[in-house]
Image (cartoon, rainbow, N blue to C red; front, side, top):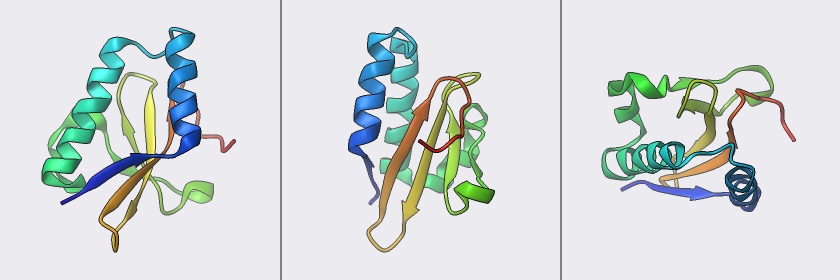
Length: 100
């Protein structure tokens, strides 16, 4: 079984995005759907959903993955195989891959 967790930084970022009306209720529903897919069937199941465009990242994000939740919104996450844990590292609404 898989478990999805957020970093504290991501929790703050999501709250900020909601407060600034940059993250919509629909975006949150898609993110919840993404989480439910992973927790129920595993991250490889994302390949069956074209909406997410899930893929490996390179360069400074080597070892991380990205999934889309909107045209420009991304979830950047990392698989922790031994713990069977997925930690969401960043949620962005403007396709911003810069590290903070």
